[in-house]
Image 1 (spheres, rainbow, N blue to C red):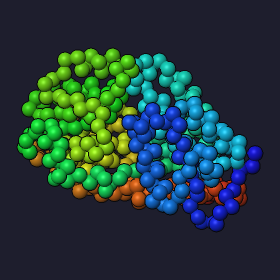
Image 2: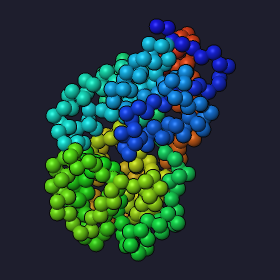
Image 3: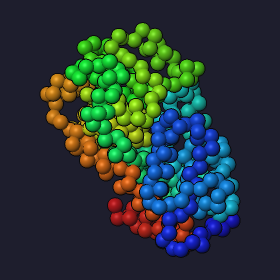
Image 4: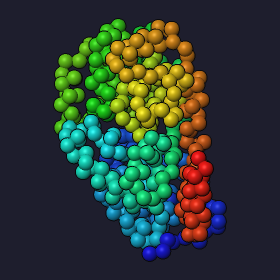
Length: 362
């Protein structure tokens, strides 16, 4: 069926269905954060968010649940263009839930079907684009998940709230991590790191259903060191306060398509230490806005340098980098993608030609 083109004035912001459906189950995940960010971007750009039955000009899909695939296929059958946001890869599925490694090949096949629904696929980093371009035929745009720098600006008041709730003095050193309790997020090594630094308080914000917890995580948490504190799931406001209350954000994840929590930490002005993995090579060089490490000994050394004040202060550069990813700064780029999709087919062909020419020139 031919694509339905909006009859509203040219240049006007489209009516967008930011489809959630079973995505309600992912509200506490990075995908849930990405969907909230997209809603904020669309509103700031003047787009109208409508329900699935509200005659949208464009549909945005974010989850890999079957209902998203079905709704996307229905939208395309009705001539409504679809944007598929690629947050998931086989690589970041492995090492997540109990048994995920066994079904990872099937999950990759499923992703091929999920992303095939999109007229265009949007993914947050060049690294994630390289992972999915092998099984996606549609054009792939790179657009950061973004961060609300105003919300995560932190400050003394937020720091004081967290430390009061945690019963901490101002001078007690605190290391924070945020994410699901899964091997991929580096929780096992985080426990080891806490054990090697007994004079530092370690906090982990995030949880996972007990039945889905990987045995390696369960074993690591069976006898945790006394300086490790599990905060469970926190509201966005409490996560913001935790960033501000920490002296170091330590993110030991083995695999990410971007890492929204890293952007949040950078916006909060807390020093950031991450694992040296491929996803950061394109936008997070070591020693500019973040520090990097690999082994537990290296993480402990860098953490000690930061907490003791011997390391250079990278937080101004971190805030500047977060500002480049601010929701309001990138909203126009998302709106441009939607407008092109909602244009007549000739405009879409021109866009494809421009993209191909740019690729040849690069």
